[in-house]
Structure formats: C-alpha cells, structure tokens
Length: 640
Image 1 (spheres, rainbow, N blue to C red):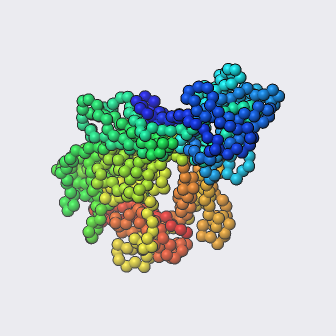
Image 2 (cartoon, rainbow, N blue to C red; image 1 turned 90 degrees about the horizontal axis):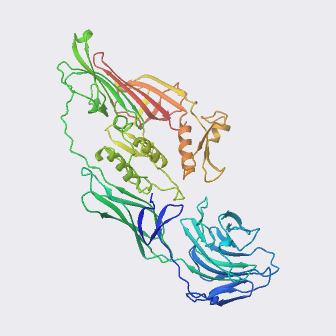
Image 3 (cartoon, rainbow, N blue to C red; image 1 turned 180 degrees about the vertical axis):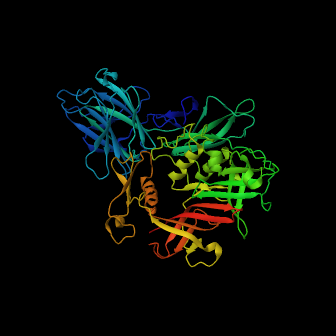
C-alpha cells in the first residue's frame, strides 16, 4: 500500500482509498450564460466580482424572500469540478432553507448526486449529499458532513466567499468545502459513484454567484519512496515492478537506483490521457525473482537388487500423498538423513508404474533377529512436496498482496520463492488476473507474515474456483477440478478375466452425512441478499436418486467475497456430489490414480448402470516376502 512518506511531484495521496493520484488544479475562467440553460427563476446574469483574476460569474440576483433559481450546463463535465461562490445574506422575511446545490447528473445509466451546502441556518446546519436513483423522482439522503461550521465563512458587508472542490476517483467522492475542517469523503457501498454528464447549480433563498470549472490534471507526475530498499548481495539484484492501477490514464514504474550496490526504489510516473481525467496507483509491487543453485545428486536405485521388502502408499485427490518402505541394508549403504528426494515406482509381473515423488523424513534403523538374524533394515517414510517442504516451513513473510498479478505468474512466483524449481510447477496461463474487491480501496488477500504459503495458495486458488495439488511425477499443479471426458480411465467389471482387473472386494455406500442440497452465501455488500444454489429434486421429488425429502443447508458468510454466486456454486458442487462412495480392492494398480474416472459394471450395488465415479483416494501395499500386491480405491459418484 502506498504510504504518505513518499516523495511526490505533481501527485498526492488520495484520502481514504490510500492511492497515489495526480494532483488536480482548477483556474477561474469567464462564465458564459449562453452555455447554461435557465431551468428555474429568470434573475440570472453574468457579473465580474471584485478580486483577482477578474472573470465573469453567473449571478442569481433575485433578492425576494423564498425564491430560487436553477441553471443547467450545456457542456458535460467529469465528476470533478471546482466551484467558487459569493453568497449574500438572505433577505428579510426568508423562511425557506438557504442553500446552494451542485448536482452531478451523470450519464443517466447510474445515480446522480447533489451536494447541498447551507448558509447560517439553525435547522439545516450541515452540508448534505443526496443520491438520485435511475427512474426515481425524489432523491434520498446518503451522507451529511457534521464537522462543518458556516461561521468560519464570516459575512463581510453581507457577503461570504466559499469554495467547493468536488472530485471523484473510482467511485469515491471527495468534497472539500470552505468552512469544513477536513475533506468530506463518501464511499457508496455499491461502488456506483457519479459519472460524466451535465451539471446544474441551484441557489435557494438568497443571492449568490458562482464560477464553475473542470478540475484539470498535469500531463504527468512522479512519486518515489523516501528510502531505498537494500537488496543483499546473494539475492537477485534486478527488481521487477507491477502496479495496481485505477482511474483513467497510464502508470509506469521504473527502477531508481541509489549509490552503492543493492540500493533501489521504484519511481512511479502517472500520465494523464486527458486533462480532466487522472490515473491512480493503489499498490506498487516490487519483487525479485529467486535464484537457484545447481543441485548435486548421486541417485541410488533399489530396482533389481532385492533390497525392497515392503512398500505402502496413500494418495489423495489434490495433495496428501505419502509412502512407507522397508529395505534390507546389510551393508549400511543407505545413508539417508531426511529430506532426500525419492521416486517411488511399483509393478508386479509388468513394467513398473510411477507411484509418486516424495521427500524423506528421518529414517528408522533396526536389526531384525527374526528374519535376517541380526542383519540391519531401514524403514523410511516420505511425503509429497507440499507436506514435506511447504506446510509449516514456508511463510508469506515479505510478500505483498497478490492483487493485480496474473494468476499463473503469481502462483509460480510464490512457489519458486519458496524453493520449488520452476520445472516442478504446472500453472496454465488463461490470462486471469487476481483482482481487487469491486471497491478497489478495500483490502483483499492481505497475508500476514505468519501465514503459510500453502494457506495463501489455498485462499487465492480457491477464490477463482480452482484447486491445486500434486501429480505422480512430483509436480505441483493448479487448475479446475478434473472433468470427465466421456471415456473412463478404468471399467470396474465383475466379469473381468485378466488377473490385474479382477475385483477382490467392491462396496458402494450412500454417504448422506455430508450431503447438502441447499447452499447460501451471504456477503456484506448486499445486506441480506444471498447467492443460493439448491437441488429441488432431492428435496421434493421422491423419484430422484438423491431424494432425502428435506432441505439440508450449508450457509457461508463471506463479507469480502467479490463473487458470491461463484462461491455458492463451488460449495454446492462439493456438498452435492458426496452422495455415494465406492470402495474396491484389486491387484496392484499404481497407474490408476486420484482424479481419474471409473465406470461401474457390477450388479447388486444399487448403483445405476454405467454410473461414473471419480477416484479421490487410493492406497497400495506390496510385501515381497509374502507375495502380496494390492490396491484399494475410494471413489465418489459424479452424478447420482
């Protein structure tokens, strides 16, 4: 987040949204009544008040009590205008509120706004902001500026000079008023601020003159931190930058190197594409890609040396892969200490299939008197990369927010910075950007230093409806959940002849405990509105295979969720699919993995013909001494 201790040239920190923007300016110029239509009152003319520069104002000079006048601009303005006012004491007999109102009519597709400023009125002391909804006749009050004292204006010879500065940025309206102690900031909850359109000025209950001009912005401005970032010599010295921008215009970021090695800071340049529009920068990411030292390895294989005695593995959809193995080690050849990389493959009377890639925990050594008369064996356990090298070991310390990043680039950057070689990362780039909340000034994905890398990846990957995990080659991948192509990876056939296809056991269970047929996601942006998905057939239709005759809900409160409908669908898909579990055991099949799809051709299970299940977990065991090689699978029905 940009902070006020930056060095600014032609820029400023925009209040509340904490963004860097070009600093606006406005200059008085002659007003022309021909460029304004009179919508109410006929006492309008141009006049040059005393002062510098001497320019024409539009003057509403009807001095009768309880009168008002309205003029509407022929030109359209961005919702960024400066208004200079001369306001005169109300006439004797005035009973109606004394006001000046500036209305930003906008483009008609969104709301219009009126800034209403009183003058020494006991009943209406404070400026008010009114919102005009599309299609509605009357506006409604949305905000009031309490820290305002009209007495600050003074009345010299019955006249007071006042200025309004009305400036919108990405839906946020900032109004500075003479007589107010600080800027008045309004943030519409729906993000719909004023838009470009005509402007009207209303004078009520007194005489007043005004000069209204568009706020302009310099062609460019620069900003940079007041201090340098010192990069250690062992780190990549070349910074890369990624700005998160808003408004209209261009934001460029370049390195500004200091004296001496390793000192660097970003120089942010804002370029206005049009004089009355401004770009803003919410965040400037500076990052340094990691460097990797060349690995040194001297692999040792157990294939063919008969040392492997027993092997077990367990794999889950996504992640949670592990294995256990016991090997003869008569000569003390396996000098493992922990964290070594191991490739696990298994086979029986056929070519080996790779099971997984794991990383060892500290080995356990023993001398087994029963089978090998005092000769040594070693037992090892290994887990996948995520469990062994990320969870509880790598954190988001010194990471910035991912907002503004290309998703694939951020996923790869976080993992490589955590030590994962680029070749072990699979992240398809579909152009998806990790966006901010609809209100860009709100925080999203601000990970603290104590947040684990895996937890941060869970949040961002899950936020776009994807998953991430391991594959059998040891790569960390991300993407949508595996989709059924229409062709199963395996057919569960009770009439199978081949030894490796025969079923040892098979069991189907209706798993209703976690089943939910209604999901609602509530957010803080839509009050009591919710995004809802439901399976009406399971509630009301007794012929439905999923019928339970009841509404079972899952309610999620996610106040910072920008897309509640997507989260509701994801939650509903998960809760609704867990309706039937299938467990079966066969001869060892390490090539059949979680994520693959199985068609069931087995009778007596109360499973529809040709039902398709997705494997979510498997476990394998091999015992060389006993001649056992089996696989056990857990699968869940796709749509039953």
